[in-house]
Image 1 (cartoon, helix red, strand yellow):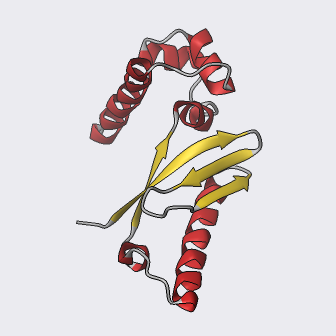
Image 2 (cartoon, one colour; image 1 turned 180 degrees about the vertical axis):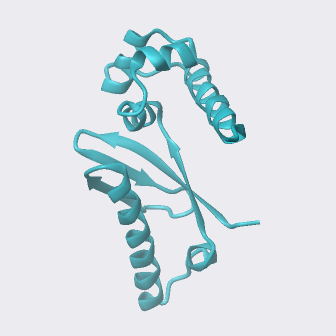
Image 3 (cartoon, one colour; image 1 turned 90 degrees about the vertical axis):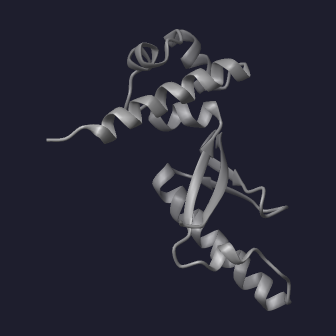
Length: 137
């Protein structure tokens, strides 16, 4: 089983920010797209380890695992923003059952979904992912 590090992701006006429950006080912000953000996260984790070793501090050993898998946990705004170039809000409405106008409000940060609504969106996207993975040619 691969060691998994969960990174909490939020959308910022120009990019993304991240925190990790396993690393108290570790917060990263990056302007740009998600792909460059992922690289920045890895660099920041490496820097965190270097600083801890240099200062003689302890750190979670999972951070130096060669097979470390980083799992990104999006808030609803960052999740919708990340996928808005892949799926239209009309398609997301069809997939999730949530009105596309409401999805737009969530994506723009004008409102936040209730927990039940957030779970509905995430569960629908997970179902879609499972369907796509099960396809064969």
